Image (cartoon, rainbow, N blue to C red; front, side):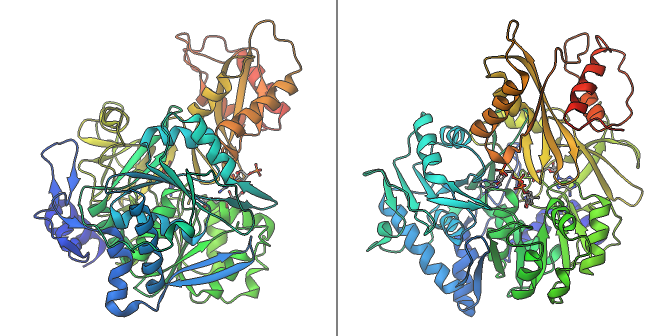
Length: 630
Ligand code: COA
Ligand code: AMP
């Protein structure tokens, strides 16, 4: 069957389609049906099945005789180490850790926060939670203590599993003081912490609260897999929204297993035993779905890469990893390729390696610009597939189903909707627009298995953020269009989310932090175009009356404040002082116009603008920091 038939069947007979896919998963009790729609517009899949994620990702491969196959390859140029963990080893390591968690009282449904860098132990911690039905929430290492504290208070973990440190080029990230600071700031206190001590930095443990990773596993009985319901949350992953409070995306167990398993062959075109590499971080959804769960559920070998595309040690690192581990399908963010291209435009480093095992490159996380795609096609000599998805969906909304049939690539489009996603382009009134017309991208409900059923402890916010604007649809927050061939084109966000180096950030969250500066009366943060990172945040601050300290001092404090409160990942380096912000007569800040000015683009003067003269001041301020050219 070709793509068209598969897609049509997924929409015409979702029950038959997904029940057939569910057969590829080991259930303790098979679900009686696929879709549970009694609570529409909230939908669930496979709710009455019983299943365990860790069993499907680890044990079943050992039982099937693949115990000796590498499950994980850790390749860490930042520590100069490499090692492999087989499926059999992974099973015993995970079962022991799960046993230690259980011995300390972690049970099915309890939350566990994981705050770790790119080490295999991060995946082991995730799988150990899954083994006993605990709900993990991984927090990206580039977030500061405050962001960690917000997540601790939202999901109220019984336990936090952390590493002593992470390693960024040129500096050690001291996780332990960040963890201690976060626990101090948070209202909710975890009962205990498990600390994985790395050689690069051994952290001081707090007696009675912190336990050493190895010591706490000593003498405990390994845990068996605990069956959970199909709608049991596998994990919570926080992502940026319009406000400072992150949204806790809930991932349901059954749909997650079924959908990810489908994608491995049909999108990424790998068979069990093949090596698959997603160069992302376990703190992001790509890391959850395609460093940890997807490849393991499907019996692939996954690579945990601790390094950067450039500088660890050079722009040839990715090519070395692909060549050395015989990677068949490779997934990264366009920004990583832009970094390589900038350092090594002729791809001289690539000539040193044999990457002939590689069949395709997959890009996601941000818009893939045509230059980057064409450069990658030329130097890597493999098909380059852009695909579009979000933390909320957990897997591809639009992509190229290369394992079914490789559809012609149209550069700039992530290709077509994947099974179960009935993607529509709507105007403001919720009416579908004609092909080629720009609109809000929405997906007709229900979303397919594996996507979010709700937000953690925030059903009202779930409805408000995703369901209320267009009744009967899920609002993606992206704007774009569909062409005559059904190809999707993703143009921009419709909310205050920006994308910096493939990282999803909220300008609203940054504004909340800037507003807390005692000298700031009013502020706005926008995302300006950036050659390397796609977008870069720029802050505008208006000072409180009577403040006459040097502006450079205040903006430097603003930069530090965001780094301390949100974290280095915000990459917030540009702030300017202005007298006023451009607004409509009703007082709405005209951020979109400010973006146009920053990017040196033409714009139409809005009829509702209060005082057009302010725009010249904005332009002047931006020119002062090297923007608003052209
Ligand atoms: N822990 C702690 N700090 C981190 C971190 C982590 N896991 N990840 C990033 N940071 C820090 C960086 O060290 C940097 O700090 P600095 O301001 O002291 O230099 C800051 O956060 C900003 O990081 P980033 O925006 O990533 O910029 P960079 O200059 O370090 O690297 C790229 C630029 C393009 C090489 C890098 O962003 C990259 O590899 N991007 C790919 C992103 C990706 O895979 N995204 C996942 C979606 S698929
Ligand atoms: P995240 O939840 O961090 O994965 O970010 C999801 C958002 O990133 C999407 O809503 C888009 O705005 C953007 N995005 C992800 N992939 C793509 C893509 N292939 N093309 C364009 N935008 C993308």
